[in-house]
Image (cartoon, rainbow, N blue to C red; front, side, top):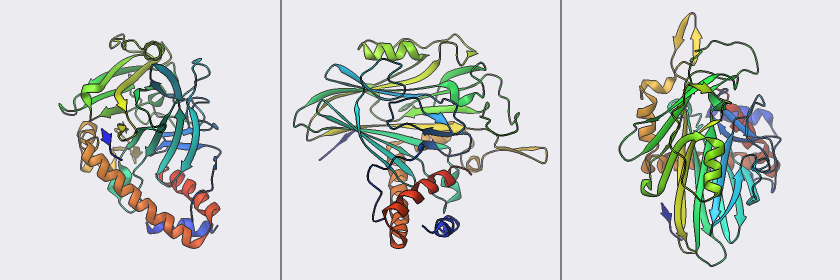
Length: 356
């Protein structure tokens, strides 16, 4: 895509009592990326998004990786870039809002803005229950020149296992002829089979989907080492790996997208968006009965949910609604306290809305 030129929660925020705007250069102890349930709770505890892989709140790695190629040179902007022995795209900004985290990177005359947006609107139970986040990547030319740009994204399967020795499977799924979607999950599906603290989900299925610019989008499901190396060497992605089920740690299967943005000029930036979703299938065992997620009252399957909310028109509308709600919330906070209050409570909101 080309781009031209709750009352209970507010009560909680008020009780804490402490934005104009956010405190400049504030780096929280851990930065929320994709946070919409206690199980699907991905954070970055690093100064830069490229210092190491993101983790689950328990500290277990939940690897997300992002690269950019600018005029033939490849740089890493997310993941364990040092281990991957890759040059990094300089991170210049980090801002954590109540429902969105925004990173800015710059390199070789190109700016990359990456927004992680979760529709945690506590005034609307249906929207709050949606098990999805958006990863929006916008590329701008900032030196007055035109640049040829490609983007790479992958996530491995740690999100669907409580132990990386557990077996996983992966598949392409049908969410409409004008979309590309993939899913992975634990082969055994240990539905609500654990108890205690510091545990991770090992049932249900994780999805990623793209619903725009399909003619310049490629995908695969293959070894993360092979796919990352292929992109860094400017070669074709490897074919879909069919050796399954296998252990999560066995050659680290990844769901992969690449995007060819072509020439990005000063007058026309380029944007791509990934819908990241997780269908827990069962959220709780209540007096011996397995209960399904609230959102399934409207969307019986994850494929139906993704088919709708990955549409550009729907994702644009939902993100606009999120940002309107967010601005209203920030204005209320600003009327109570200063920048430090706004900054702190933005983080509190994100953590609290992701704990339900």
